[in-house]
Image (cartoon, rainbow, N blue to C red; front, top):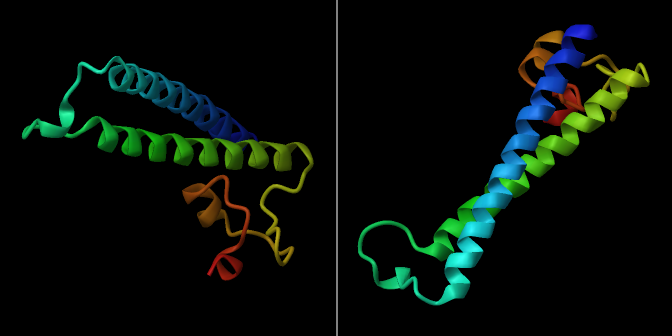
Length: 111
């Protein structure tokens, strides 16, 4: 379990950085949209601020969801329930945990 705890802790740090970065990007986009000088809707090259906002917002939500799943996995390690399917109670295959350390379901229940 120590290997998984270390892996999940590193994953949590990386995801927290992604969340912070996305929040900074949204702040920049928000400032550009609010100052009224950026006329990106008529720029034939590059994406619009609205498209950028949607992309960064989706990335932020995905990172937050992964961060929450990682935190739950770390709690399961603390409570000695890591590696047990939350649906059926059977063991989650080690190969699945290696691929998705925050997995909450065995492959059968995930399908």
